[in-house]
Length: 130
Image (cartoon, rainbow, N blue to C red; front, side, top):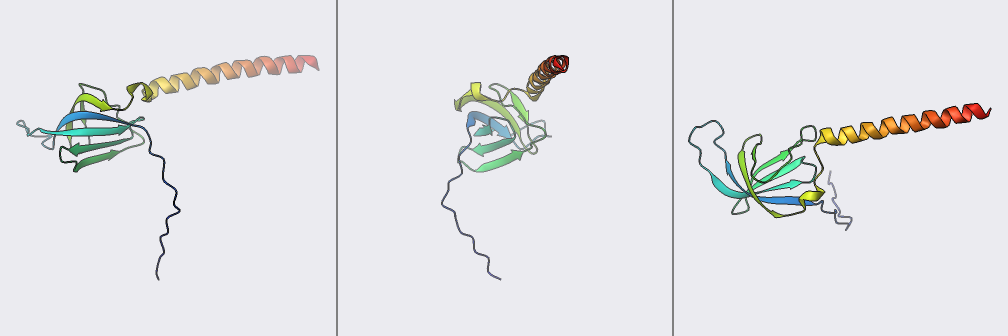
């Protein structure tokens, strides 16, 4: 059976990314680590992180929807196979970054509570009219 793979001609919209300078090491367990220069690229919600060498080789691609990692300047991040020390931001807008999930969940809970109160008030007014 021959499977045809045709392109629809539509380009996938590229999601916004943050790019940082970094040094990374594959020697997570060794006391003496060999540090290499590279870049770390992340999407705004922290679920897709790519570490690249200076030569643009992909060192590690971290994808985890359940445990996002939020990248900030001058931090250390431990990915599955790589330890990364993050340097200066090269491109992207930090202000667009999705805030920590806990803060987002608190905002959602507050909105839901407000909506419930409004719904109760409207419902009571509606019942009083009958």
